[in-house]
Amino acid sequence: MPDQIAMHFAPVAPDIDSLIDRLEDFFARHGLSTALLQTFALAFDEIVCNIAAYGYPDNGSEHGIDIRLWLTASEIRVEVVDDGIPFDPLQVADPDITASLEEREIGGLGIFLVRKLMDSVAYERRDERNHLIFTKQLATPAQAD
Amino acid sequence: MNITETLEGSTLILALHGRLDSTTAKSLEDVLPERMQVSPALIVDLAEIQYVSSAGLRVILKAAKVAKSSGNRLVLAGLAPQVHEVFQVSGFTALFNIQEDRSQALAALA
Image (tube, rainbow over all chains, first blue to last red; front, side, top):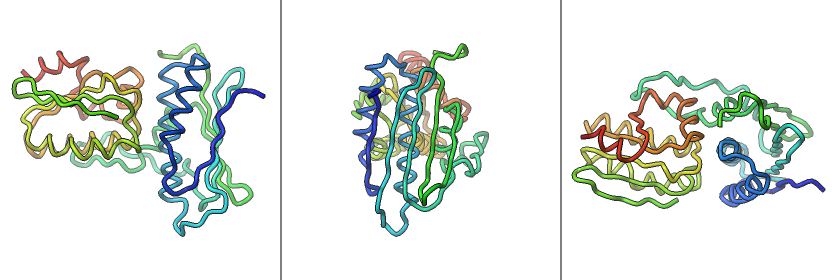
């Protein structure tokens, strides 16, 4: 069975720290760069926190949040599945990243960063669950490392 | 994440070690805005930070707003390339004085 990370979280106070620990081990094991680690650690932090904060307004969950990360020949792929309220992160408006310091707000920045740092992000609502898949190419010619 | 505080002359240096994310941002928020309010010059040294997420950026932005309103000076130093990229994509490189390392940050404040 190919090496992967698969974890399940309750939507209340998910233990993201242990996920980042697993991620660090996995990336070290596969010789993946610290730049890739930054990108995926950030993505997990933003996405899982967001689901925990907004996905379950009634605090009710039968399934919680499942995450999986694995390698293909050319890319790192992540799937995040949750049974919270429908939420498509691709529909969130971009923050104004040119606003002055006084007017600058942080809302929406996390999801914006995920969209910018990943090569692809896809969303689907299926079987009453949110499915988010994001990928990043390995060793693209333009990789600035 | 650990925070080490050092005073160099009248400049306070906060060196952060570890991860600056949703799990750890609160421990920085307990210290940084308060120190920023009372320190004429403050350096946040990120050389030992492996990664940041928006929860960490939020606290650093808060410190910048405190610096602006108090007239105190804030400099960030030692951003690893992958951390710098996040600052860049966020538009934060336009909002902050960012220096290569601690000694250059001290020079910028001199």
